[in-house]
Length: 127
Image (cartoon, rainbow, N blue to C red; front, side, top):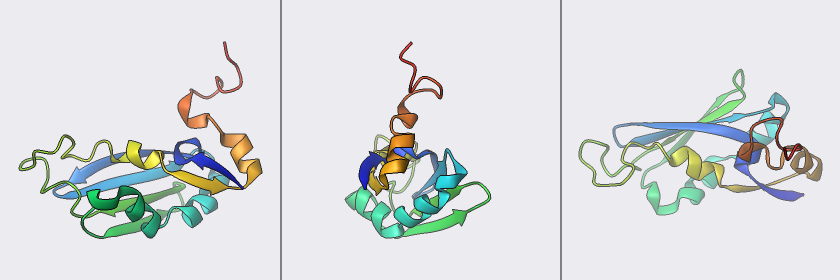
């Protein structure tokens, strides 16, 4: 097993509705969807965000998109219209989740390492 950041396996989008942040995590390669589902559990996501998420975390699987979607309840200090938080609209929750370190089989780590940090095609080509 090897440790990688989630950003090497998937990309993400986030937003908000009131006091709930929404984070969708989408694999780059559909062959990695099963490992994403296995590794990215409600408990892992809740633990990663710690005290930032005061409510429950819900997970929804979207196999046709190769994605899992999370609702992070009570995570925005009331929401954009009443909060003094820097990101009361949940825009950076996706970036924060992509920094999560996960253990994957060595062969997957070898094939994806660095993928999320450089445009496709530039990972192996330094020019």
